[in-house]
Length: 266
Image (cartoon, rainbow, N blue to C red; front, top):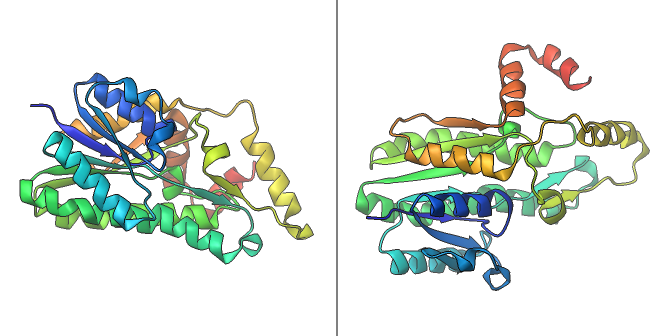
């Protein structure tokens, strides 16, 4: 019997690549997104079912889950992938952007997960995969909002795995490094502001991000890691995706705060 995964944020990047990867391995896919009417590629795939889901809208979450279950009978795995990235000096951010950052990356993830848990509990099985980031274990300058949400995802996931174990459900965290997606144009909110004191650190960060020597992995690599996480029988919690993720996180674990801050300043 085919298994089924529900994916949030499946219209592009990691979400779409994961939908395609699971489909290629014989899974049913409930591919959710805010505007499924605009999707062209996934509609061509058999056993891929599109649903409207905005993680900020509780009714759309409930309806998407019900639609997926109605279509395939059962959901075996959840990928919380939908996300939004706010970067820049905290002082420069309007409060509504701060609220959007945490509502999308944290509250939305919790709402989707909470809505699907009763189905998993009834079936006494399931896998929840939450997309974190290297930025859930370490930080870059100007990312207090984004990193705050990803640190929250790590803590939520680690604690949730205890109670989910009681009902036969596994929890997994996937931590990608830099990925070649259109996240920057679609889901990235950079607020530089006009405060002169922050200009040097903004210019330095931009220079680092635009360095052609940066290691960037394709979304398909993350999709492979997600598939491995879902299908592994082990209770491994964290899975890294990308050589840069290994490099950065290994250094963060081995170095003191002062040593790591110095490394990040290079």
